[in-house]
Length: 268
Ligand SMILES: O=C(O)CCC(=O)C(=O)O
Image 1: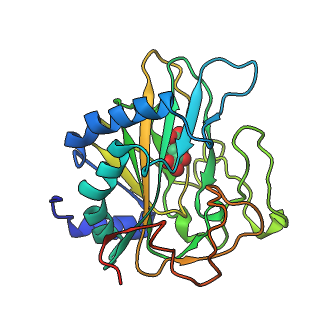
Image 2: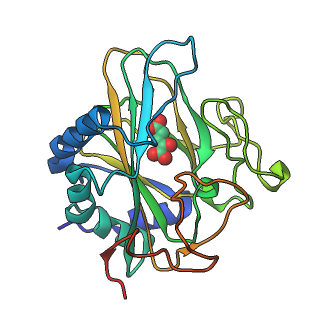
């Protein structure tokens, strides 16, 4: 049973597209860490290494593993995530989109580029949420960074490949250029919280976010769970989505198929 959300948190999620939730997943950290360990030993075909050739460190990620890694499945179905998501999105129903593991090993200066997840995903709707859950303490130097209010910008940020940096959809002019908030601090409000294991950042799929590297001596393991609510519908994108979900068989405007994206709360 999740702690009730206060009104200020729900209002801030709608306004800023991101909020920090303290201690909401404390009892799940060991389970998630076990899942990450298994994920590393048994990677999926989506497993990726994100450190450019010749640079130091290791930054790996993998996604869509909940139906083969029981720790991730248990977290999705049994933790307070779905209930918190319903409260923050103000939704009656909550569907599971996917899980995502992102690990920066010690001495990894590679940053995560500023990006918004929305244009990579085939989901359209106002009720979307990711929980970014660090399994190790993170300082403001290693935490997730998010641009307040960017989910309400009139266009999405141009999606680019993390490693190569090139864009992969036609008509780059349909998107905003990738911002650089550090070069222009007066124009952007960056939200960045030091976090302990058990804390989480909840953010809208439309929020522009990224992170610095992990140059220190400790691992930075993060687990993200991505969910959506009542008004989410399938939308085709002008090129390959990430995750791709091949052969999904959905058309524009369809509800996301529940056999692949199960309801965690409510449903038909
Ligand atoms: O962990 C990171 O560095 C980035 C996380 C991220 O982009 C996400 O969870 O959507």
